[in-house]
Length: 126
Image 1 (tube, rainbow, N blue to C red):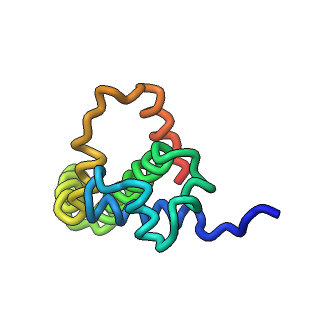
Image 2: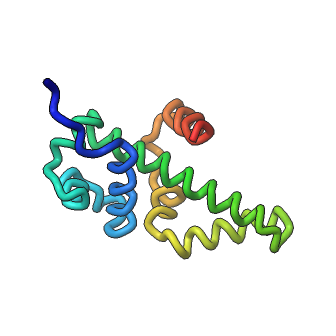
């Protein structure tokens, strides 16, 4: 009989987001994630193939959070739409410093164009 699943993928991604918020992208390791979850790294790798897959999930979740903040700003109606996007961008940078760095200040030279397109499609689904 397979072992009982301790965490869902969503719970692991949420803990990984917290790890990035606290220690930046470099602070997201299997050990730091396991410490956040209060377990060994084994349950993480029972649901994810590698840390790259976890990091990809964090990137998608961070982008979804940014999009949600953008929609909230637009629906508030305090500014014209063109200004709302700028204000949401600035607010996100101020409130979510490490997630902002992850989304907008990472080196993208090594990223494959196809991977970026897949991330965009996944964010649309979320």
